[in-house]
Image 1 (cartoon, one colour):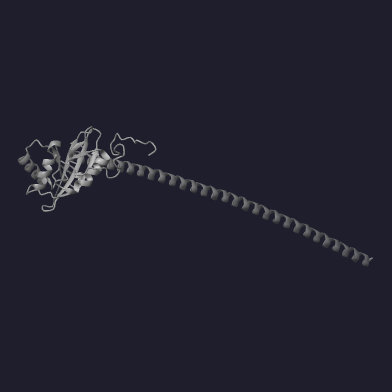
Image 2: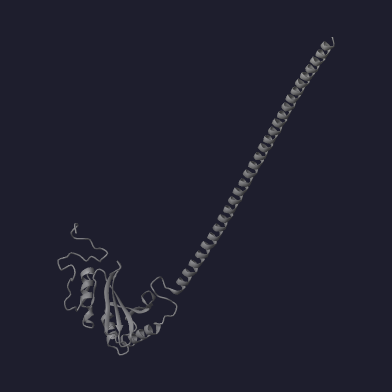
Length: 278
């Protein structure tokens, strides 16, 4: 009987131990499950916080970029406005300078002819030429006399057609003038009239003068200067060839470029080719 009682007690103890072990195992499982749940909750919370933080950072970055772009646009607009203002000021300044230059030129020049109201270093020369011409040939032989600023301030005499040779002769032979060199002679068709231009130079006095004469376009004829300056020979032939200007007293007035058979004079404004295919 005693043996059975001990066996029953042992069995109860084993059952109690097993029951306790099961309880411990169940408790451990519950604790493990609770811990896992807590970790999952913490991780979820952390992820949620991180996600919220990323959104905030992204929002901040977007806001900063927008502010930077806005500032750049404002700076560009200010720079454009300043450049426009400066450009307008520069244009206005340039216009004012141009207007001032035009006023100065208008005050100094006479109608774009090369005549200047301002003094020229060659004014005394022009006065001397005019004085000598008036003294020897009279005051009615000159149509005009001026300083041509567009041609290195050369004193320029415009003579009447009938006085052309006499004035040229005086310019060469007078002791105070002595224009011994003819450097240029050419003709020009101005449609309303023709003109012969002669440039003379005095080597003894180292002084220049320009001599001009206007002639009729319908009958372009004037005295030759070859008797005074042999160098006028070919220039007068050229003017005859190309413009039809005849020079009375020329020793051999010929068409040196085109020949005597050529019809018309190519440098006349009314020139029309005789042969349309030429």
